[in-house]
Image (cartoon, rainbow, N blue to C red; front, side, top):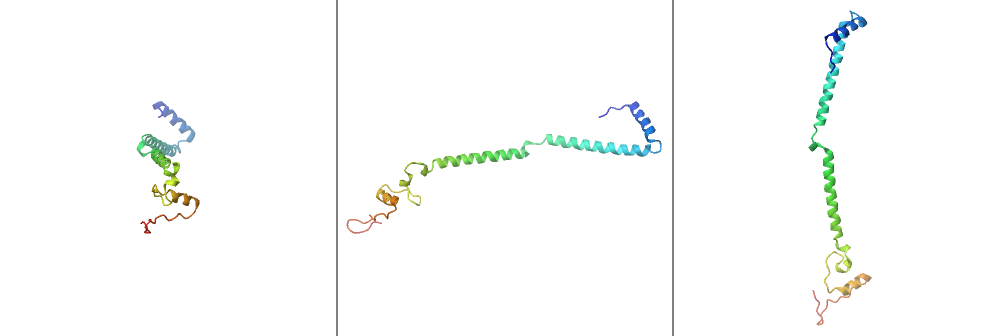
Length: 135
């Protein structure tokens, strides 16, 4: 990190001896060594963490999972929209083709359709000419 040669270290030692004094210099050197060790430890941890973050696989990326779920939801909504466009109530005249319970009406029920649209009771035309009733 710092390129300190022998003469630079000697100069730092002499200045330290003059500023701190000979009696406190060993304790000061020990404390300085501890600080340097802590700084090196913190820098190596930061470097390791940065490398781990840079090598982070995209397969663990939660943003990709969210994007995939969003695409699936969009596709399902499009499918639902297409089904709704094909629904019978979107076609003209759908009310006259289906009964109230959703079954398709027979083609000969046009008289009953007119009666039910007006709210009247339909005429019972299930009787035959011979007086018996049709099922």
